[in-house]
Length: 33
Image (cartoon, rainbow, N blue to C red; front, side, top):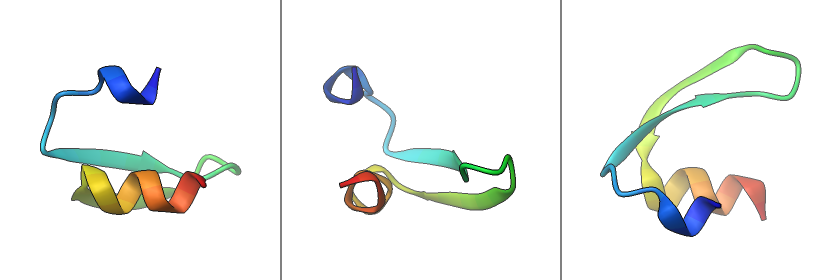
């Protein structure tokens, strides 16, 4: 599903529901690997 995201920046929510902020998509995808 992550390959379908087209936005340049995304809001990242942590596993506990805490907001990690808005960041470039490539950085957010690195976090989930």
